[in-house]
Image 1 (tube, rainbow, N blue to C red):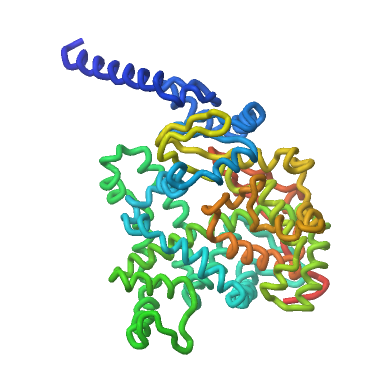
Image 2: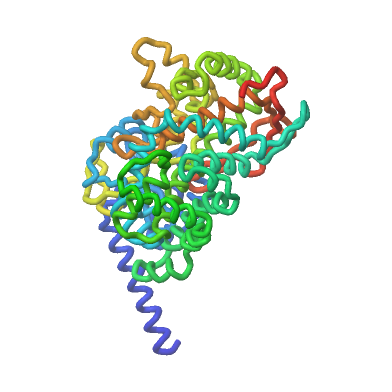
Amino acid sequence: MDRLQATFYGVLAALVWINVFRWRTNRLQHIPTLGGPSDPVLSYLSALNYILNSTKILREGYERFRGSAFKVADLESWTIILNGPEMVDEIRKRPEEELSAVESNEEFLQMRYIFGKEPYEDPYHIYLTRDKLTRTLPAILPDVVDELGETLPEYVPTNGDEWTTIDVTTTTQKIVARLSNRVFVGLPVCRHEVYLKMAVSIATDLIKDAFILKTSPHFLRPIVAWLTSSTRRTVRRALPCLRPVIAARKEQISEHGLGQDWPGKPNDMLQWIIENEMLRGAEDEAIIARILLVNFQAIHTTSTSITHALYHLAACPEYIILLREEVGSIIAAEGWTKTALGKMRKLDSFLKESQRYNGISLVAPGRKALKDVRLSDGTVIPTGTMVNMNTHRLHLDDACYPNANEFDPFRFARIREVDGEGTKHQFVHTSNQYVAFGIGRHACPGRFFASTELKALLAYIVVNYDLKVAGDGKRPRNLYFSHAILPSMSGKIMLRKCLLKETA
């Protein structure tokens, strides 16, 4: 062995021992480890095991450490998993200065490297979604219903009483993209196929970019993002689709004045973002980046939720009949209004139960410790550590939901019949036992829009279509990979126009 090799192996050995020493003195070692060895040298084996067997590991952790914590390895670091409604309440009560949702989200998405510091430091699109979009829901619902009437016949073509087979995952993504962008960018761009492709692909682009960045050294991340970012390329490809619309709207703003109203002024997310970015003197690319960020928040989660619900409907036709009776009678009396959707308790319950039973993530909500935090059970979360809730197991806890491992579509509708429980168990309501939308002040800002969109879409389908699962008629099994819960990517359902009558 020559001197250079000896030096290399000596440095490598020193680094290993330094890591071991740091680990021995790190308070994380006092938190139980599941999924494999906790030794820092072998932690990558634990991370690989967790990616492939997360459901089994999280189930074991919930059973052993309910009301407390354990840790699992991922490819970049250790993550603490908290278990049970008591721990959800701990997360909810902790201030942002201790356990930060903002920094956790940045750690997950690496926004400052992909989009630059401005969307990270001033995420005003989140506040537009939470406040302004929510307030406009009664006004925009007719546009959503109008788009349903155009979109479903296009993506689900039917002929008389013949059944049409669709790939559920890709079809729901297209439908949700169209509906969402009728509200985000309006006509005609919401029907522009190239733009819609960009709106759908932004989710996979952003997740892929973030993974590459998180596995890169910090000092190289700006260069890696510049060289490899699929998200940036998607923003540039969307430019030709939106640039003429942006130019026309800017011209109107210049004519009438920034912040002023005029007859026929668009009232959508694109208009609000243009006005915000004009105050900053930003280029069109910044406007499009914000619009695509809003799409990232909306399309993947909503399309996953409706896919889960459609699989349950198609596998159990008796649910369709009961929902059709409720929806049909309310629509006949009140039309397609926000108030009407609010009265559809069985429909609301069906969506909430599907979200509880299936979900879109095994864990949530994410927090990052900005200082050492001691929990009520004595667990110390060291500064810089990521914290997640064992959400899926919480939702399948019999102590929270009797017969939790059974899909009971009208579970929450029955609970709401009890005096004083009418609003506590709505689809959008969060609690220490139901965290599908997160918890506390950082709960999903778009859940009111998502709920309205999902309810309108599901209501429209049950009154206009019959459904069944293709093949053996059984609901396809979900897929689990690391933290993600995905409905079957290859599953197909069959639809035909409702034989009784057309109601829309």
